[in-house]
Image (cartoon, rainbow, N blue to C red; front, side, top):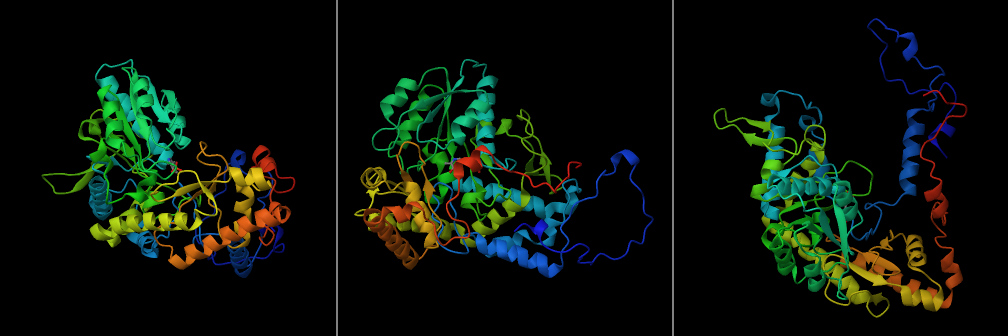
Length: 483
Ligand SMILES: *Cc1c(COP(=O)(O)O)cnc(C)c1O
């Protein structure tokens, strides 16, 4: 039931004191024509409504959430506590720099740590998400070639295993996208790459470990081949959770990259909240960085903002999503130099353990040591029983487990992509393995029942096609057309 359908006319929660300043009327033309339609409820009603909604959804606080490619990991509550501190929440972006030195220190320290973690020279904290970071990085690559007068580099190479945002960002930045097929091992095929490289290539976009959860063993050759033809290498850092503190993109030949602070560094992804996709680059690209960078004035000792000389311009207002950076810095500081690589190692161990437990039950798309995630293909099961990856995913819901990523990456048919994350216990993983094994049994013995799963969730199987084709994105009050 919607909050608008609850409550009673005239019911209120009144906390606002009576107005003690003169009331000013809005000019005639700016006033609403129809009265504002608002739900009318008491505080109790509102509080219960949101608790009810909370019970109907599934979050990392409710149970296992093994969503591949979009790390849904446990984020320490301490990071939220830090981001809720008044000194961080009550500032204004136009406050004089003398008043916000602490906040500038957060930005500056976070940038320093991100550089150390990735091997980049500098970062801009402006981009608001991974895809926004990709777009920013591609504009840096474009500016780099332009500044050298090399105008014929119009192509960006993207492997077919890439996240969909990669080719989209390249196209938006005005490049022609050259798609190259992965080898049978899920990694870049070096001969295919060589054949695609010439003096019209501006760069390559790559995530490593890639979207099938494998670390490309030829990575140094891959970046070498692109550099040899004069192109730059862009690292999509969304999968950094697998190698953070262990491998630095800057050390394996990447020239610029983004990080998803909302995947790797203590902000939950997928909640629709604000994100942060900082972009880092090597020294000779720094002069193109967007927006504001924080530097310490040698004379006054104060931190302040400045713009790079050949900046591509602002990518977002002010300094990006500041509180997400506060969370990331808190996370990095809590884990420290030892804890960060430990977290990655546990993420990789958990994924390999779960994959090993399931190997005899489900077909693994790539049967080798994985990184932070692994991909199963249910193509055989579907041929044999009619049960698809979607049916298994829906069956998981009845066991209180959030489904893994389905039907991605596109190069694996009937894909389920599982990323258990570092903070899940052996018991949780064991239980999920049992559920997945039981679902396979059910697929073989009683497929019809599974086809209508889930049966115990607040809503059962939804008409996803209708929802995608005819989305209802806005609620309107009956008869309300004057907004
Ligand atoms: C999530 C993801 C992106 C896009 O990041 P957003 O923050 O969602 O825009 C890009 N590449 C990969 C591999 C991802 O997993």
